[in-house]
Image (cartoon, rainbow, N blue to C red):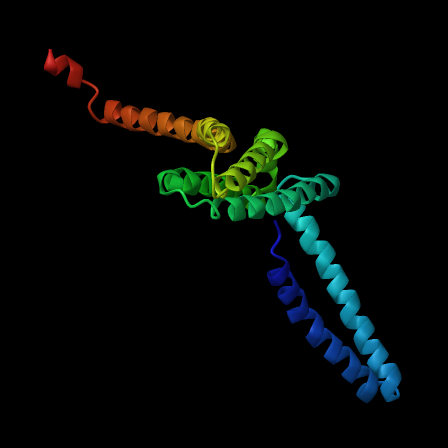
Length: 219
């Protein structure tokens, strides 16, 4: 997603000098009073700031091949996912079992990786819709229930059995998250394989042109 802080600083870096110059011209050159000059300065800065916002937004959408409607849709869903991931982070680190530390780290690592990739390249969101609309909800709900049960001071046979079953389900869901991550990068993997094949073909072609009779001599 567009970095709001960087975007704000860039727009301000241009808009503030324009505002100052506009005010100075109005006050000194055009000999306007202070208040009208101040109004022109603020107006000029606001116009430039708004135009830059529009231009940067259009450039970003064009770069990522998205419509404004698509971008709003993706941004809304990523914001909701961010809240869920924070809940997931909280529930995972309230679990005190040492035996499941690696699993919890893997779950958090994969979910954050998927989220960061979608934020950096919003169009990848469509390759991870199963994660955002199903798997993330499931794993948040499971970890929160697991955290609640694991925190009980006295555990009955039923609670212990539920914890075992939940751990097994979390193992399966972790594999599902890995598949979600792979799905996000599957096009990149296919493209890489294509580039490798092209490079191999080019290398072989170059060898054949340099040593056209090599096979004959080897015989």
